[in-house]
Image (cartoon, rainbow, N blue to C red; front, side):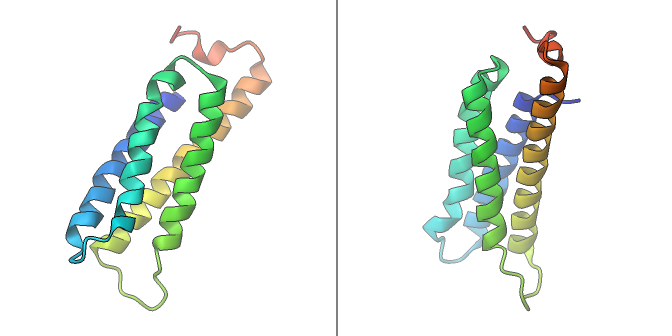
Length: 124
């Protein structure tokens, strides 16, 4: 199982890269398109604290990741529209955030069941 800080780093890079691509392929360059890269930068900044197993940061990152998934999926207005590059990238960002949230929650559950923090022993 991958550790939350690795999943967070991958998810943040996906948000930053795909978000910037979406921003630059749109002709009007709306500021709203920079929300995903901004959230990605915030998540990437939290990676060090996730590696140190700070519980507050871990829960905050989980909430921000779930919020990012909701924001990105809400921007995916695919009702009757054809899927172009923008829609595919928004879908990839939303899926990445949902998978990251699922891994975070799975790690919480697994750690809670073991109650000895043996999941993270090799990191310390």
